[in-house]
Every structure is written in structure tokens, then in C-alpha cells.
Length: 358
Image (cartoon, rainbow, N blue to C red; front, side):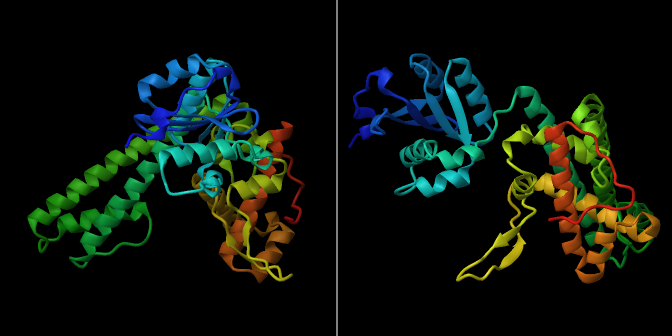
């Protein structure tokens, strides 16, 4: 039986006001409605047919899920005169009314785009330059993960022959020297460990090159230079914030920005009882990791240099677990960063006192 999508008579194009577009590698599903919210378009297109089809339509609202390729298609459809919005997938899922299929997904996207409350969650469309800058950060993160894997592999294989080393990448060099110098270690093992060490050095070099590219982006970006003045953020964190947060004004408040980064607790309240759990871990994990790492460094520095301690932070450290304190400080740093991005101001430290996070 042929799908109804191919049998549906194509409506007059002037009646279509909103289209849900489900994208994939080669097949695209469309679901369009008219001004009375009645379905008037259900159609499946091949990749090469998409732009030609939309070029024949009058300007309409086109909605799609935010994904890797959606920014490209959004720019192409905008160039044809359409208004394009991108919705995070987690906000589309509740509108899927039946089993998983491309047609059901396209209908759910179209329905989600009509909800006024979801407009604040639309994803800004990125330019090719913004995507390229973000790719630097993602590739760097992949190399860091690869470096960690290689280091753990070397430690694991060394332990099989009775060799151990303290924590830290800097301690691996002595471990490698000890393995090569030990006559009881088979030559084949030494060759394999040396191959892992060579690969680790190559990955380290790639990370260093990407760090230089991030620093170039940092120096050329006025916002990044302002954000770097925030304690615990630094040049790398500031660059990531400036290239990953396309439009800080899309967030109504600093708290909303911190929530987008997943630095606010989950709410499990019921029956009039407020119960807050662990952080949501929503949003960009790379930014969250950088802010938490920066907060941890600030706390360690505060412990070493009592004269620069922040009274509220010192009080929390005395009462709460270290990881919780780091999350609280990361939340505060995110709020400060949002304020600087929105206002265009520079960071002004208040002598030795920092206000208590709310």
C-alpha cells in the first residue's frame, strides 16, 4: 500500500503558513498546516529536492529540530525568504502522538513550533564562522579524551608488569623510562608501550596547536577578553563562552543561563514539600566542565592564599562538601559571565568580598 504522503494532493502554496521539517541524511519529511491549523501538506522529499521545493513556496515559518546539519539548512531556507526556527529535540518529543516515524516527527515539530512558551527555547542559527570556531573546541575536546585513553592504557599495561606512577600526565615520562630500562620486560611489550607513547606525544602536539588557535580566537574577540578577567574562567573558558553562546540576550536572566548550563538542582517537589536534588546536567557539557574546573581552581587558590579569600565562599567550604562548593561557585561564575555578555561591561572585583550566590 502506498503511503498517504505520496498520495496527498498538493495544496495551493498560499495556504501553507507553517511547516515542520524532519531532516535526515537523504530523506526529508514535511508536515504543513494552514491558518486554521489544518494539515494541508504531507510530503516526503529527497535531499536534492528540498531547496527546489521551498523555492516555489511563498515565505512561511519552517521549523526543524536542532541538530548538526540543521544550521546549514536553516541558512539555506532563510536565503529563500522563509522564517526558520530550530527547536531542541527534547521539546519536540512530548508532541509525538504515535509511534516513531518521520511523518510523526515532522507533525510534532510543526505542532511544537506553534507553542508560544517554547519560543524562548528556540536555538539561534549559527553562521559558518561560528560553527568553525565551535568545531575547534569540539575537536580539542576529542583529542583530550584520546590523550586520557592513551595515558590510562599505558598505566594499565605498566601495572601488569609491576610498574606504577603517581597521578598526572607529567609523571608518565619516568614510568616510560623505567619500563624501557627493566631487563625483565619483554621486548615486544617495550615496543608496544613505545608505540602508545609516540601516539600520546602526537596527540599532545595536536592539543597544543588547537590551544594556539583558541588563543588566537580569544585575542581577536573583545567579549572573550572581557570574560577572561572573571576569576576561574581564563582565556580558554572565555573563548568557549564567546563562541558557544551565540546570543546571551536569549536568556531572560542569569539564573536561566545557569540553568541552561545544567548548574541548577533538579526539582522533585510534591505535596507542598520542596526537594532539590543533584544538578540537571542539561545544556552544554563542555562549558559546564570548564566552569566547574575553573571554580575548583579558585577554591584551591583561596585555600593557599588566605588574604584573597571570599568570606561567603570560605563559610560554605567549612559547611559543605568540596564538590558542592565547586558547583555553587561555577553557578556564580556563569551568572557573572551572562551579565558581562549582556551588558558589555567589564569585570570589576569588589576588593576581597564577593556577594553570596542566590
